[in-house]
Length: 215
Image 1: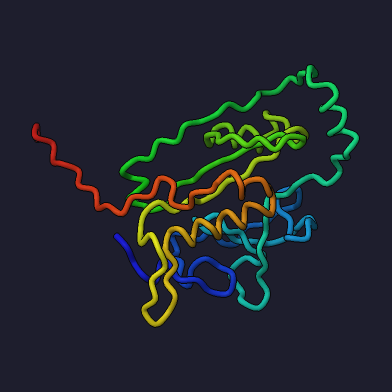
Image 2: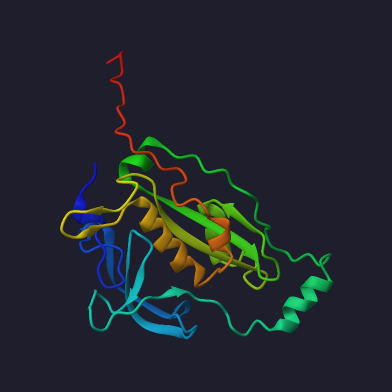
Protein backbone atom coordinates (compact mmCIF):
# COMPACT_ATOMS: atom_id res chain seq x y z
CA UNK A 1 0.00 0.00 0.00
CA UNK A 2 2.83 2.40 0.92
CA UNK A 3 5.04 4.01 -1.69
CA UNK A 4 8.03 6.05 -0.39
CA UNK A 5 8.02 8.53 -3.27
CA UNK A 6 4.39 9.30 -2.55
CA UNK A 7 5.22 10.89 0.80
CA UNK A 8 8.33 12.96 0.05
CA UNK A 9 8.45 16.72 0.68
CA UNK A 10 9.83 19.32 -1.69
CA UNK A 11 9.95 23.11 -1.57
CA UNK A 12 6.74 23.63 0.36
CA UNK A 13 4.71 21.05 -1.51
CA UNK A 14 3.82 17.99 0.53
CA UNK A 15 5.28 15.48 -1.92
CA UNK A 16 7.97 15.27 -4.56
CA UNK A 17 5.85 13.24 -6.94
CA UNK A 18 2.16 13.53 -7.73
CA UNK A 19 0.60 11.10 -10.23
CA UNK A 20 -1.58 12.73 -12.86
CA UNK A 21 -4.66 11.29 -11.15
CA UNK A 22 -3.95 13.49 -8.11
CA UNK A 23 -3.56 16.78 -10.02
CA UNK A 24 -6.15 19.07 -11.59
CA UNK A 25 -4.44 21.59 -13.86
CA UNK A 26 -5.42 24.56 -16.04
CA UNK A 27 -8.04 25.94 -13.65
CA UNK A 28 -9.02 29.60 -13.54
CA UNK A 29 -10.66 31.77 -10.91
CA UNK A 30 -12.25 35.14 -11.60
CA UNK A 31 -12.10 36.01 -7.90
CA UNK A 32 -13.68 35.45 -4.47
CA UNK A 33 -12.44 31.86 -4.41
CA UNK A 34 -8.75 31.96 -3.42
CA UNK A 35 -6.28 34.37 -1.86
CA UNK A 36 -2.58 34.32 -1.01
CA UNK A 37 -1.08 34.08 2.48
CA UNK A 38 -1.15 37.88 2.73
CA UNK A 39 -4.96 37.78 2.39
CA UNK A 40 -4.84 39.30 -1.10
CA UNK A 41 -7.57 38.02 -3.42
CA UNK A 42 -6.19 35.97 -6.31
CA UNK A 43 -7.49 36.14 -9.88
CA UNK A 44 -5.90 33.96 -12.52
CA UNK A 45 -4.80 30.43 -13.41
CA UNK A 46 -4.21 27.84 -10.73
CA UNK A 47 -3.94 24.11 -10.14
CA UNK A 48 -4.77 21.85 -7.21
CA UNK A 49 -3.90 18.45 -5.76
CA UNK A 50 -5.76 15.62 -4.08
CA UNK A 51 -3.91 16.55 -0.87
CA UNK A 52 -5.92 19.78 -0.75
CA UNK A 53 -3.01 21.98 -1.83
CA UNK A 54 -3.77 24.78 -4.28
CA UNK A 55 -1.08 26.77 -6.11
CA UNK A 56 -0.93 29.61 -8.60
CA UNK A 57 -0.15 28.94 -12.28
CA UNK A 58 -1.97 26.46 -14.49
CA UNK A 59 0.69 23.84 -13.72
CA UNK A 60 3.42 23.60 -11.08
CA UNK A 61 6.29 26.02 -11.70
CA UNK A 62 8.89 25.70 -8.90
CA UNK A 63 10.15 29.28 -9.19
CA UNK A 64 6.76 30.95 -9.64
CA UNK A 65 3.91 28.92 -8.12
CA UNK A 66 2.78 30.13 -4.70
CA UNK A 67 0.30 28.60 -2.30
CA UNK A 68 -3.34 29.70 -2.25
CA UNK A 69 -5.84 29.46 0.59
CA UNK A 70 -9.66 29.78 0.58
CA UNK A 71 -10.87 33.33 0.06
CA UNK A 72 -12.22 35.26 3.03
CA UNK A 73 -14.30 38.35 2.34
CA UNK A 74 -12.29 41.10 4.00
CA UNK A 75 -15.21 43.54 3.69
CA UNK A 76 -16.89 41.90 6.68
CA UNK A 77 -16.34 44.55 9.33
CA UNK A 78 -15.96 44.29 13.08
CA UNK A 79 -19.24 46.19 13.26
CA UNK A 80 -21.04 43.26 11.60
CA UNK A 81 -19.45 40.77 13.98
CA UNK A 82 -20.29 42.87 17.05
CA UNK A 83 -23.87 43.23 15.82
CA UNK A 84 -24.43 39.49 15.56
CA UNK A 85 -22.72 38.99 18.92
CA UNK A 86 -25.13 41.43 20.57
CA UNK A 87 -28.11 40.12 18.62
CA UNK A 88 -27.77 36.30 18.73
CA UNK A 89 -31.54 35.95 18.36
CA UNK A 90 -31.30 37.22 14.76
CA UNK A 91 -32.14 34.33 12.43
CA UNK A 92 -31.36 34.45 8.73
CA UNK A 93 -33.16 32.44 6.05
CA UNK A 94 -30.27 30.01 5.73
CA UNK A 95 -29.24 26.60 7.02
CA UNK A 96 -27.34 26.17 10.28
CA UNK A 97 -24.50 23.60 10.38
CA UNK A 98 -24.71 20.49 12.55
CA UNK A 99 -21.95 18.27 13.88
CA UNK A 100 -20.92 15.25 11.79
CA UNK A 101 -19.41 12.01 13.14
CA UNK A 102 -16.74 10.74 10.76
CA UNK A 103 -17.01 7.11 9.66
CA UNK A 104 -13.85 5.81 7.97
CA UNK A 105 -14.32 3.07 5.36
CA UNK A 106 -12.00 0.42 3.96
CA UNK A 107 -11.94 2.43 0.73
CA UNK A 108 -10.73 5.48 2.65
CA UNK A 109 -7.87 3.48 4.20
CA UNK A 110 -6.96 2.06 0.80
CA UNK A 111 -6.74 5.59 -0.64
CA UNK A 112 -4.83 6.73 2.43
CA UNK A 113 -6.54 10.14 2.53
CA UNK A 114 -9.81 11.27 4.08
CA UNK A 115 -11.42 14.60 3.20
CA UNK A 116 -12.55 16.42 6.35
CA UNK A 117 -14.56 19.61 6.74
CA UNK A 118 -14.76 22.10 9.62
CA UNK A 119 -16.80 25.21 10.31
CA UNK A 120 -17.05 27.93 12.96
CA UNK A 121 -18.82 31.21 13.52
CA UNK A 122 -16.63 34.20 12.76
CA UNK A 123 -17.32 35.67 16.22
CA UNK A 124 -16.82 32.39 18.10
CA UNK A 125 -13.85 30.05 18.55
CA UNK A 126 -15.95 26.88 18.75
CA UNK A 127 -15.27 24.55 15.79
CA UNK A 128 -17.46 21.67 14.64
CA UNK A 129 -16.75 19.02 12.05
CA UNK A 130 -19.30 18.82 9.25
CA UNK A 131 -19.86 16.65 6.18
CA UNK A 132 -19.23 17.51 2.52
CA UNK A 133 -22.89 18.35 1.88
CA UNK A 134 -22.78 21.07 4.54
CA UNK A 135 -19.44 22.33 3.28
CA UNK A 136 -20.90 22.63 -0.23
CA UNK A 137 -23.91 24.43 1.30
CA UNK A 138 -21.51 26.91 2.90
CA UNK A 139 -19.66 27.43 -0.40
CA UNK A 140 -22.97 28.20 -2.13
CA UNK A 141 -23.94 30.53 0.75
CA UNK A 142 -26.87 28.38 1.88
CA UNK A 143 -24.96 28.47 5.17
CA UNK A 144 -24.24 32.17 5.63
CA UNK A 145 -20.64 33.02 4.74
CA UNK A 146 -20.92 36.30 6.60
CA UNK A 147 -21.53 34.41 9.84
CA UNK A 148 -19.43 31.28 9.26
CA UNK A 149 -16.01 30.35 7.97
CA UNK A 150 -15.29 26.79 6.77
CA UNK A 151 -12.28 24.79 5.61
CA UNK A 152 -11.51 21.49 3.92
CA UNK A 153 -8.56 19.33 4.96
CA UNK A 154 -7.05 16.28 3.25
CA UNK A 155 -6.29 14.04 6.25
CA UNK A 156 -3.80 11.17 5.93
CA UNK A 157 -4.90 7.93 7.60
CA UNK A 158 -2.55 5.18 6.36
CA UNK A 159 1.13 4.74 5.52
CA UNK A 160 4.10 5.03 7.91
CA UNK A 161 3.08 6.74 11.15
CA UNK A 162 6.43 8.47 11.67
CA UNK A 163 9.15 9.93 9.46
CA UNK A 164 11.54 7.52 7.78
CA UNK A 165 15.03 8.45 6.56
CA UNK A 166 16.34 6.40 3.65
CA UNK A 167 18.85 8.87 2.27
CA UNK A 168 15.97 11.35 1.98
CA UNK A 169 13.27 12.38 4.42
CA UNK A 170 10.10 10.37 3.94
CA UNK A 171 7.52 12.08 6.16
CA UNK A 172 5.06 9.92 8.02
CA UNK A 173 1.35 10.43 8.52
CA UNK A 174 1.88 12.53 11.67
CA UNK A 175 4.14 14.99 9.84
CA UNK A 176 1.87 15.19 6.80
CA UNK A 177 -1.17 15.94 8.94
CA UNK A 178 0.74 18.55 10.93
CA UNK A 179 1.50 20.23 7.60
CA UNK A 180 -2.19 20.12 6.72
CA UNK A 181 -3.11 21.68 10.07
CA UNK A 182 -0.56 24.46 9.55
CA UNK A 183 -1.94 25.12 6.08
CA UNK A 184 -5.54 25.20 7.35
CA UNK A 185 -4.55 27.52 10.22
CA UNK A 186 -3.87 30.25 7.66
CA UNK A 187 -7.64 30.42 7.21
CA UNK A 188 -8.87 29.16 10.60
CA UNK A 189 -6.18 29.64 13.30
CA UNK A 190 -8.27 27.83 15.94
CA UNK A 191 -7.95 24.55 14.03
CA UNK A 192 -4.44 24.11 15.50
CA UNK A 193 -5.91 23.68 18.98
CA UNK A 194 -8.89 21.65 17.76
CA UNK A 195 -6.95 18.97 15.86
CA UNK A 196 -4.43 17.91 18.51
CA UNK A 197 -3.91 14.31 17.41
CA UNK A 198 -2.26 14.07 13.95
CA UNK A 199 -2.78 10.30 14.03
CA UNK A 200 -6.54 10.48 14.50
CA UNK A 201 -8.23 7.71 12.45
CA UNK A 202 -4.78 6.32 11.56
CA UNK A 203 -4.43 2.59 10.89
CA UNK A 204 -1.24 0.83 9.77
CA UNK A 205 -3.19 -2.15 8.50
CA UNK A 206 -3.60 -3.99 5.23
CA UNK A 207 -7.29 -4.70 4.92
CA UNK A 208 -8.57 -7.97 3.53
CA UNK A 209 -12.09 -8.11 2.18
CA UNK A 210 -13.35 -11.72 2.31
CA UNK A 211 -14.72 -13.26 -0.84
CA UNK A 212 -18.48 -13.46 -1.06
CA UNK A 213 -19.33 -17.06 -0.10
CA UNK A 214 -22.41 -16.89 -2.33
CA UNK A 215 -20.34 -16.40 -5.47
